[in-house]
Image 1 (cartoon, rainbow, N blue to C red):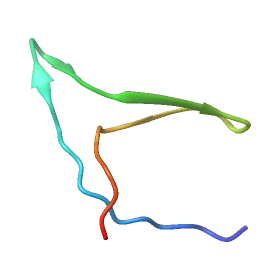
Image 2: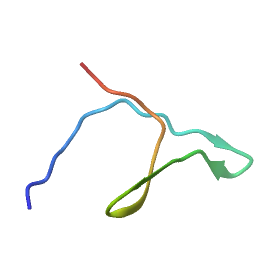
Image 3: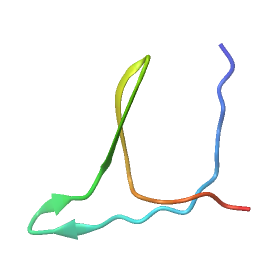
Image 4: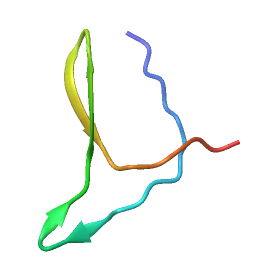
Amino acid sequence: MPCHIRVRPTALIIKNNCILLVEYKDDEGTHYNLPGGGAE
């Protein structure tokens, strides 16, 4: 199975001992990432 690697800027946001994560759901399940965007 080929692995796709994507470079992107992200932010680690901590407030009140909690970390902000973005939740994604797809056919493979639920995934969590740091908020960020694409790099050109």
